[in-house]
Structure formats: structure tokens, C-alpha cells
Image (cartoon, rainbow, N blue to C red; front, side):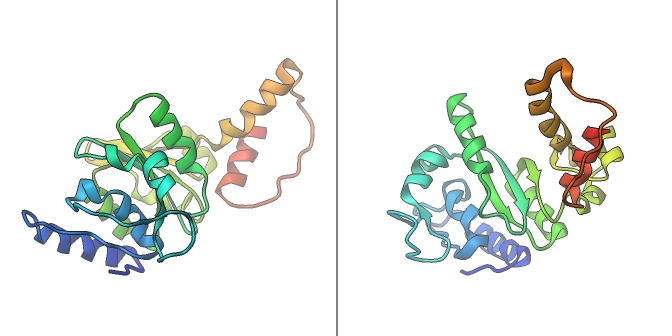
Amino acid sequence: VYPKSNAEQMKLLKAFKDLSGLNKILIAMGDYGVPFRILSPRLGSYISFTSLKNDGAAPGHVPLNDMVNLYRFHSIDEKTMIFGVIGNPVMHTLSPLIHNTGFKKLSINAVYLPFIVDNLEEFFKICQILDIYGLSVTVPYKEKVISFLSNFDDSVSSIGACNTIYRCGDSWCGTNTDWSGFLAPLEKRLGSKLPGGKRATVIGAGGAARAVVYALV
């Protein structure tokens, strides 16, 4: 199957669920298929496919080294917590490398995946089926995702953008860590010498730029 939207991902999940109790193989192609290849043991597929390297053997193939060492494919089971990053585009992000390395070092049974999103409403249905615990949010959804949250903190209210969402009961809550992620290196480098009353130029006008302005203020 070659899903090209979140709606088609939903159809794939429903079809796979209908095959419950049968031996089956889940093959999902392209960028929309990547998470399902990695999660195939969790979804009940007894085989997945990969390539020795990122040679484009087939759209959606995850290089063998990434499958085994980055995503720890052989450790994924029904208790594995699922996290990820949503955006469009999103396949270029280094977030899976950062977070999965941390999970491995801390011996946490969790996996962090890239999810390309074209429809937030459809994607949150997928979150329900996969029981996703939390997500990083990148362009173009840092502002749009707020309407899907049941609660969010003052940072989101002030900035008008959200880069981190997490489960709170049966709904979703949000916060913004972009501003502190911008400010922390400056404070570490300058300490008490962090200048006040200065002018700054922020290049950009999206969610991250809003967070930088908030941090500077």
C-alpha cells in the first residue's frame, strides 16, 4: 500500500485491524509509510522490509542501521511508548536521532518517529489508534495545533504557538519549549552579563520566531 495522506493511513490501519488474528505483513510505502514499517511488530506484522543503506531501493525503506540501532526495531513490543514529531515536511528532521539516542541511553522502552501530516484532524485519529504519548510540533502546525488542545500553559497563550503536546487523560495538553531552548544557550554563555535594553532582529515570522521574541522580551 502506498498511503499519500493521513486519511489513507487511517484506511490502512483499519484494514490491518480487520485482519486481527491472521498472519499478515504490513508494507506501507513512501514517507507516510515509514512509521508503519518501524511499528510493524507493534501492529502485528511478522515481517518488515528495509535496505542495507539509504539507496532508494524502494520509497519508504528505512536503512538497516537506522531500523536496528536508531529505532531499535527488535525491541518494539506492545508496551513500547510511541512519541514523534509532526510537520510537513518532516522527514529531514534530526529529532528521531536525538530522542531515540536518549531513550536508548536511559533504557526507556519508547520510540520516537517522524510523522508527516497533511490533516491534523485525521492525524489525531491515528494518535488514538496508536496510543501515542507525546509529540513535538514543527512547521506548519505550531499555531494550528492549538485548537486541538484541551489545555495549554501560559507560554502557549503568550507566544501563540505550541511546539510540544502530550496526553492528559483522554485529551491533549500543550506547552512551548522553543523560547527556553533559545534563551538557555545565551544564559549559559553570558550568565549575569545577559544584556538588557538592547535591540534584536528576528528573521522569520512563524511559531519559532514568536517564541524567540517572547524569550527576548
